[in-house]
Length: 130
Length: 136
Length: 102
Image (cartoon, rainbow over the protein chains, first blue to last red):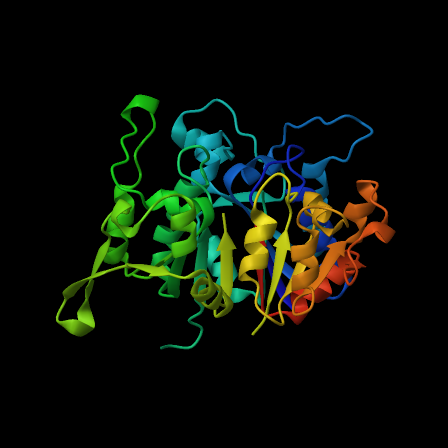
């Protein structure tokens, strides 16, 4: 099966991104494909490169970056939701005249069309939110 | 219908303004319209509040996005299912909802209502016939 | 066509579980995850509704979420079984669509 995953809440405050991560790992271990994970609403905050969680806690962003690299998962952050919440990649920061960019490795910013496309191209679309 | 057209259902169960889910869900619908899929919207539980007419947001300083629902017809999104029991539980009737119309190109562009008030069990049937369900 | 419904909030916090029970059709499955696992406990105000629905709808909890919350799997409503994440993936595979009740 090809699974598409939508994550609709931010890291740590809600369990959504953790549940999604555990689900995706299990799906990959089970021989399924997870071509894309789409981050929407506060979920865009999962992709910050600036988080410094306590040493004895999981690093949610790092987990996704590593998983994506190992299994070629496309981590897409919705541009509209990202702009509202101050998540900018280098290009966007330049275009918007901001002096910093904060997207972590392995994540890319793109449009809502990527979510619809994910729904069309996968067999199952899973939503993790609140 | 061409191949690869899927039935997409957008499920709305939350009130507007207290959280962003209603607005950002609508943004997905508008972008999604370009993909020519078979789109339906479901409004149940507190989601029915999103369609109430007369929203005036000046006092809270946020944008009133409710007029956007009236543009859905232009995007060929014409199936807005609203659950009757959810309305009744909240002391609402169909009259409390804004008029959302579309022009039916198969019927000489006659103006028809996009909102379909359905019973709980009809809503369950709507939900069960979909290929992709997005919840916000 | 059947649906896997997921419920992630406690039934004492939001009406999501009740709404899910009201809309799930025979042959569907309901998986309680995260705080939703509290819906599987016996002796609560919603337990009868859950038990009644379990005749026609398979009701399952995500075991790791139960354990995290210190809920004894032995205190679950009769007929509810527990799965791990691999089981969650299997359920999503077996049913045609997954619908999240947020």
